[in-house]
Each structure stands twice: as C-alpha cells, then as structure tokens.
Image 1 (tube, rainbow, N blue to C red):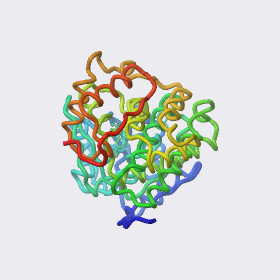
Image 2: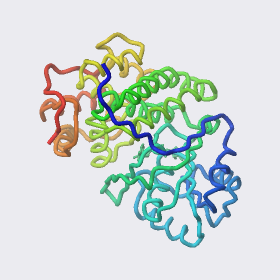
Image 3: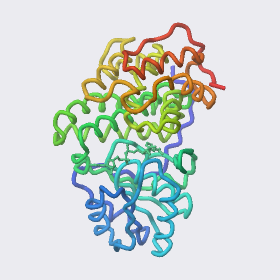
Length: 363
Ligand code: NAD
C-alpha cells in the first residue's frame, strides 16, 4: 500500500566522481566571480579550488569555524564586499559549508559546494549559527547550494576517526528519515540505500583510508543521507544531539554516533525498525544493537562522558530536549529519557522501552 505523498525535489545540480574537482569551474563559470571559503587547515585544497575558478587571494577566506560563529561571518562579509564576487564556493566539511550559507543568507549569492566530509550540509536549506554559547538554526532556501561537486579523491585525507564519526552523522540522517512523518517512498528508498552503503563502507574506510571503492561508497551513502536530511523532518535524535552540542559543547559528529543506537532502541521496532534492520543486514529487532556494534568496530567513543558530558547532566539534558518541542515518533517521559541518556553517557548497550505513546509532539 503506497500512502499519499508530496514529492518536491530540491533544484540542485550534483556532480559525483573521482578526481573530478575541475568540474567546479564549470559550475562557477555561468555565475561569475567567486569568493572561496574554507577552514584554515584545508587551505592547500581550497587554494587549488581558487586557482581552478580564477579567484584571487583577496577573494579567499579560509577561517571557517565549527558552528558558524557570527563574528567570523561578519569578517567574511567585509572581505566579500570588497571583491564584488557573484557566487560563493565552499571547500571542506560542514563548517566551510556553514560559512558559505551564512554569507548567502546575508548577501543572497548562489553557492557551489565542494564537500570533503560526510556531514551532508551541502544538501540542506538549514543554517546553524552561534554567538558565544548561544546556538540557533534557521531555514532559508537561499542557502541551499545550487551546485555540489563530490570528488571522492578529496575524502582520502579525512582521518579514520573523523571519517567514522562523520559517517555516523550521515547514518543518523538516513535513520531519522525512516521515521520521518514527511518521508516519501522515494526518501525511504534513499535512506535504506544510504544506510546499506555507509554501514558496509565505513569499517573498510577506517581499516584503510585509501580504499577507493569504500571511500566512494561512503561518500555516495553520505550524499543519499544528505538528500534525506534536506527533505525530511528530523526528530528526537537530532534534538538530543542539538541540545548536547549547544548546552555542553559536545562534538557534533561523535555525539550523533553515540546517541543513535539508543534512540533507535527507544523508537522501537515496527515498519521503520524493520527497514533499518534490513538495511543493516541484521534480524528484525536487532537494529539498535547492530548500530552499537558498528560504532565499536569503527573505534568511536562509546559514552557521552568520554566526549565531554559532565557527570549528572542527563536529567537537565532530557528536560531541555523535552522542552524544545517538535515531532518525535515516540514520547518518552522525563524519567525514561534521563535513563536513556544515562546509558548513552556511560557507554552501555542500548535497551528498548515497552509501550511508549506513539507519534506525538514533545511539547
Ligand atoms: P568540520 O567541517 O568542522 O570539519 C572537521 C575538521 O576536518 C576540520 O578541521 C576540517 O578542516 C577537517 N576536514 C574536512 N575535510 C577534510 C578532509 N577531507 N581531510 C582532512 N581534514 C578534513 O566538520 P563536519 O563534521 O564536516 O561538520 C560539522 C559542522 O557542520 C557542525 O557545525 C554542524 O552543526 C554542521 N552541520 C550542518 C548541517 C546543516 O544542514 N546545516 C548538517 C550537518 C552538519
């Protein structure tokens, strides 16, 4: 039985290849002079891209930082204004994409994104920003990159731990899409294919970062998962990670990796759980433990305490999550969510909960 749905794919051009970086010039050419942004440690690659698109040093800003601090964006706006650039090129992970989005939000310029992690921001209209400890997100179609150039070769430099964590961040996008209220049958297919590709490829990538086939499968999975993130409403899992990142400064991708098996256990079995188990190649009802085993095989930290969650912060976190509102496929009580976060904090295996009310809002 196919449920009624509305399908409105985002108007983005995506080029996926190996050593196809030069395609960035084809995407920039019709747009006009480019302003190139990147994190400082990606300056070598970003300079190569700047040369490809003919951007002078004055049109390069390589100071992108995690969570898109407004102060950095303001510096970039000043640099951008002096150039008369007609488009933005981001080179790097979610931090570089985030800075380009912050500029597009302020100056309405199109973005050509060259992603080098599995974060998926290049496929969304979501902009996250920060000012000191304050963090917030907004949606603006003007910040969704019009073109994305995926070059698998660029991901070989991503260290094993970053690859694993960033890959699990992508996995979380696809997993939440399986439970999303607005996921169409097309997005369910994309999510299943993303999970299969990522779960298969990430252990191989961690074992050998130069395994070209595994790198291609991981980036392809990240692209599919990012498409789900860009189209489907994320739920409780993302809200938990957002609260933990915002309130306690926990690292974005690793927090996703640790929390995901616990939230999947909380979401319980049902159609989405069965689809997830199938995509992970495990038995129905075993999806949460399969994800927990996967993060162990990837060598990622097991518990939130290991990545900076202070002792005794579980109840405050649970309260902030429940107070944040928004959709969730299940509605845990404060005590239940505190218990789940406690297990995630201590690095214990995930455990399901019986008979939570289904399909509701947190507040
Ligand atoms: P990141 O962009 O901060 O990159 C992490 C580090 O890895 C940086 O130092 C970066 O320069 C380096 N790096 C990137 N690619 C590399 C490569 N190929 N080889 C070697 N080093 C490389 O981290 P991220 O996980 O990609 O992005 C996280 C940020 O993105 C967070 O701020 C998160 O909130 C945001 N995000 C936003 C969305 C959205 O839709 N708005 C989606 C996902 C993530």
